[in-house]
Image (cartoon, rainbow, N blue to C red; front, top):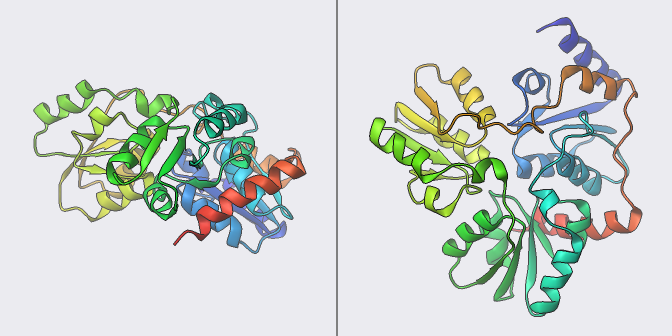
Length: 301
């Protein structure tokens, strides 16, 4: 551990701060975090923490979610310009238009969205909780926003629901092609292909396992398979390569990087602890409305 990491850990205790990091964050940032997880795990941890300050090492919608669930606490996003292309694809007006078109439908909003979109939705979900959340809704029609790939996957898992999709996606996961997966089917026939449900349906059809980042990590750690093809952002591949040197690991495509997730530096985290960065703030009405949909997600059994 270097001097900068040690300084962060010391200041973290002095400031009664909790540092949370997503699996896609750079490894040096993950190493100083109190917890590393996917969106669902971080959402629950943000709500249950006892610290006064939360430093969310991820992208803006994650920091917004932490603030929504903890309005009385100070929340920082170390890399203030770290956004999410998928979240930017949908606006509240798009949701309201769909609600008008399908008045009997419930709106299930993928957590990869802005606070403003969450505020006009009925319930949120993550990739790991989407199926459970959709099943929990009494409505037959479900408007699923913004990820059409995750929504399509859930539609197949829950055929009794009529899933209405929005034309949004994660450009990073959506860039994985059938050819990428088929190439490994030919070159490494014994390898297990593990993919995120944000990938295209035709890619999911070739996978041996489909799951969230946490699910992919768990499967890779427990499987007896010695060869694995990782079909999500390179951060997961880097974690597994460090943890499982005995396994033959490959990434499903070159350049599988979320540049926004990689913006966080140790210097950014330190600046937050030193009070040199502005905290996350949201309009009070938006925060209150978004809290309802997020809390319903966290409370879904």
